[in-house]
Image 1 (tube, helix red, strand yellow):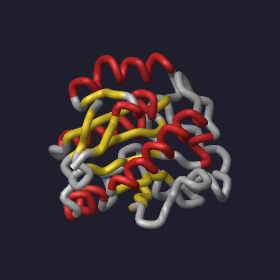
Image 2 (cartoon, one colour):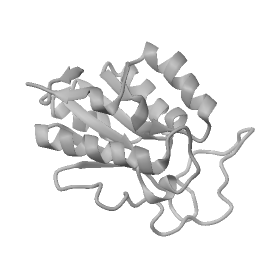
Image 3 (tube, rainbow, N blue to C red):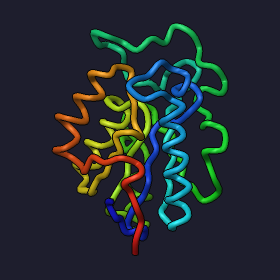
Length: 188
């Protein structure tokens, strides 16, 4: 069991929103990752841990989206549905911090670091979708900012099983403590 101090810990959930949850993911289903994230958030709130919900969204004309002069651009041929950036029903609760991002990582271009530091946060539990996009980008930036990090493997999933496994076996152990959602506890 990994015991974390609720006064200096925040739970940051990445992209548990309708548009992302509807995508095909693996090795864990969106339903399972949402359930793990919801239960972890409930436990965190009950212990006094700050819950941060991060979602991604763009203007209708994608003017605020990252440039796509890349070899494998993200498809943006059709406009996104109106509720694409909305959190899954029941996820957001009063008192949660909400961060809207316009790229993969939750720190760049947002006030997430400021909000965490003003609350005395030293440790971040990070989970969500997709492992090797939003979660990994946020993890790397948080590590560079000096946060202690915990990532439950069963609280994340990706568009590709091999990329998920590579992140958790090769990259994440160098940046954080890898665990499972049921192995996280909060003690003062």
